[in-house]
Length: 264
Image (cartoon, rainbow, N blue to C red; front, side, top):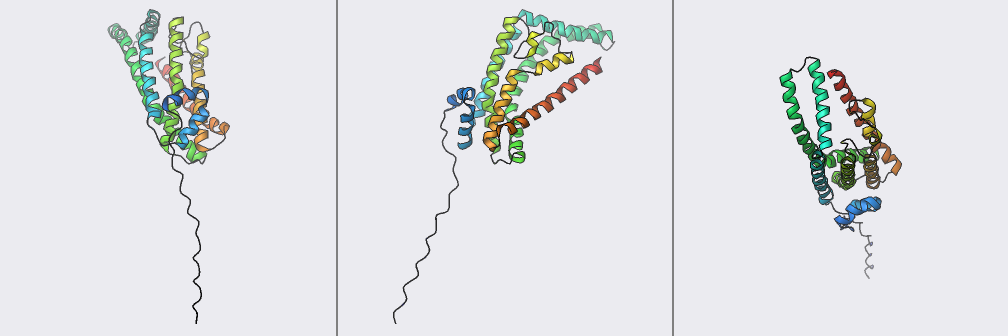
């Protein structure tokens, strides 16, 4: 008897392979420049590309370098040094009048206040340069993956925050020029530039100081990066980003006002 012909084995379709991160289409200098003009394209490239630490590290170093030069230029202005002395004298004199400081202690406090201002400026800029990418990276990653149901790595959020910080570099340069040009240490891209006698101890003046155009620009770019990474609508991502900023800014203002009230 003839053997039946063999049954052909079914042809199986090849299993789809997971998409691998591609090589970045934009160079790092192109990303740093295009984040001002076409940030959406920059973040699309970041999302589709392999992780690159330079995307957050280089903007952080740029911000640090510009901030240190800015601090040196601003603190070298006679008008700014005079404003710092007057502010320090007012605070110290209040403490002396309330009996919390002796005259000898007050004099020592006045001598160290200027040194503290210089040291504080350099420390705060260093903290901002390297903590912001990871601090806001955590915020964007949590919002994007837990709230907006996106799927992206934590370091992608760090890259987005780092690239958005390039705008902060421009903000520092603009503020430096305003301070030097106007001779006012509080000048910036906010309504305080219109206040003749700005006093940071006044609640209304403190509120004006946080209504900053550069800050809002950076927040808007971070929100765009979050929308691109998570696939959520931009307005939804922006609502969360601005809500987080408003919450912690209000908390900091409240703490500052409470401290002022405690000190009288």
